[in-house]
Length: 269
Image 1: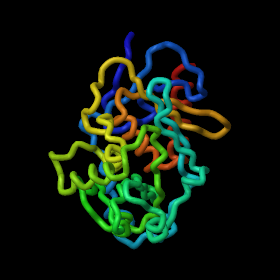
Image 2 (image 1 turned 45 degrees about the vertical axis):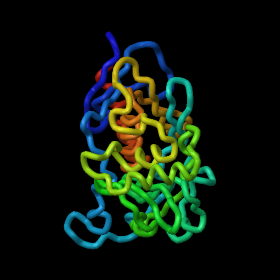
Image 3 (image 1 turned 30 degrees about the vertical axis):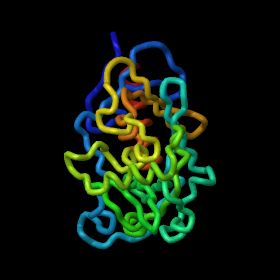
Image 4 (image 1 turned 60 degrees about the vertical axis):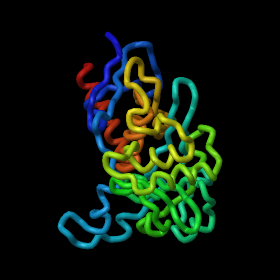
């Protein structure tokens, strides 16, 4: 039995088998995930960040970012670590948009975070402005406007690829301003900003052929020194799942995994 790919709009651990959450791995078949035609629009919940479903104003504290609900993770391409996130690292601390401006340099990649939302990435291009993918269009906005009140941080070091020069990063971003809808080559703001910084086609839609063994692994670090590994055929697909985890938060991811393990244990008994 060969490798299999389950084509889903998102991953549900109760439905899709993955590698051993306790870390033990074998050479048996594995199932990955491919986000064919899925859309990760990190602004889909824009209209919901200030309101409940009944239309009432949301308490600000409910939408407050809490780093304790972020999940440490790492990304591997075969045996090479190409991304690593440690929420307790100094550079993982978030700042208000105004304070973030004081630290930004042209070419920096920024991430804005808020509870229950997809992280929003942008490229700082100078003069208090960023370029970012927002609502299916590449826009040049003031940093404070792009943040939409969310806290932010500089995330140049998350991906381990060799970066382009800061001038080239800015040029990549500015050349795409105005592109929208079918002209876009990126599925979300993270892929766009990372492409600007590193220039790698793997961040583009269809930048890799999804055939054969899954060369990418997303390693989720869980409590009690456990971890869970998911496998993907493209970096684009992996980023989609990573961002979904970031949007729902650590507690929900752990709950999904626990449900998956309980279901698997029941079916195996």
